[in-house]
Amino acid sequence: MGDTQDWAAGPGAAERARSVLAAAWSCAVTAEGAREEYVGAHSVTEDGGVLLDVPEDSALHTAALCAPRGEPSAVLEFADVAPVPVRQRIRARLWIAGWLSQGSGALHFRPTRVVLRLPSGAQVVGLEEFAAARPDPLALAEAQLLTHLADSHPDAVERLTRLVRPESLHAATRVAPVAVDRHGLTLRIERSRAHGDVRLAFHTPADDVSQLTERMHALLTQAAAACPRALQRHRADGDG
Image (cartoon, helix red, strand yellow):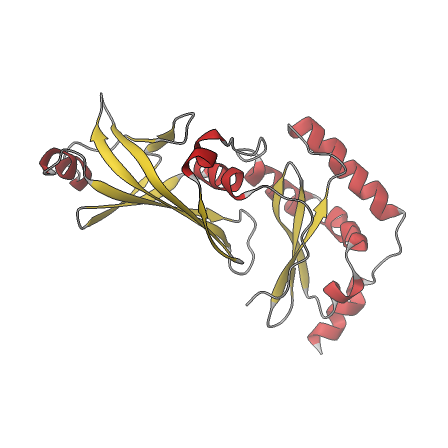
């Protein structure tokens, strides 16, 4: 179970929801009592609608054809999974309720209710806000960015812990980058029986990968000027 989180500025619920939707590769769809899971079968319209390219013999096509009013209700579920192996890898879940309709070559899904569930709780996202929001500009690159940081630059991750409050590192056994968006980087601090997330804010938002590189260099420069946190000592304490 996670402990209290330290949060700096981050994306709002609508932007986070659109980011989950944009980056998700799979989804589960429930319609007319049938539940099916699809991989690589959905795309997203500019206003947050979803197009589902599913086999014609699927339960969804049958539901769309046989629904009494012609548009069956459906619920789409998406999971936001951390690309770096950590405890409780699901960072968020997104549920979108709405209506399915037949389109040219795909099923069209029109949202009527959007719910985003984070570790801190569930939040209903307004439809107009959801339609107007845009995904975080780093959402599609996040998995590769975090994996590269964790696998190729563990020294940099360790250096960034100098920016974390000492009490947040107490009894830490492992620190890993668990999320990044245009506003900042989130570190997962694991202990023997618990974990917590700490967010390091960028001085200004990063609108693309090149700007992210500059923001990360700025954080590392700031960390270099800070006092070391002696993470190895905390790890030893945690093992005892």
